[in-house]
Length: 339
Image: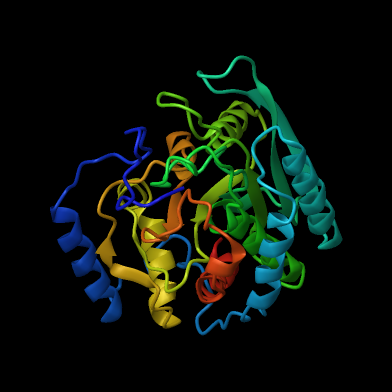
């Protein structure tokens, strides 16, 4: 994904370049109310049924292991949809999630770019914990890489593929480490870890994005006996140095209750990378949009200021564990509260 401060050179942006200046005041006021212990916190549907005085178990998330996972994934090479490196990544992740006690489903489909002839095979990975439970929540990320470094200023580099350490590998690595501890948590709802393929299988202006999340959302909507998803949290580019996670505008408009719950937890846990008093400079088009469109409340936790976005410098060396730690701390509490 990317940042509104990183304008795509071919004007083929996933970002909606318009602003609603009043949102900042709304979010700031809401966040101020939360810090004062507003009753709005207890009214949130994800927390209202929690027993009084309940204490959640901190998730023993090991950020160093997550960083190692980032390196392992990047060593496979660029994971462009349909590539051999992507297939190797799918096998790696499937094996890992199964070893963590999850039921793993490969949701296979085909999709392509308008600028390219023919489709390529794509696969969403769904790792389910407590699959017998109907009420469920989703933690998700995309795990493909953009085919080339379109944000490079040097023309010689713009056609190069890149590692996608933060934009691609970090989300998968985060879910790998998170999964290592999920089986030890007795969460009220089942948890699905979902990795979307084809988020940015884009070569030219006009090529569609978000193939995986669109396919997942449509498949869920068309199921007769579908799981009851209470909410979904998308993580995108969370391993940059000194990250900032402001309230993403589309998340606020479409899933404000979930935004309130997540940013309240961040406030309570003193996770300062979460900026509940700030809003994104522009609404973000990302994998959470397709989920909201079919009725699954979904928000996007994303860093808007990653300087290596879609560049050959998006490597493990330019990633950091601090953001991973704070996101894990917040989501580790949330999965225990959601019901």
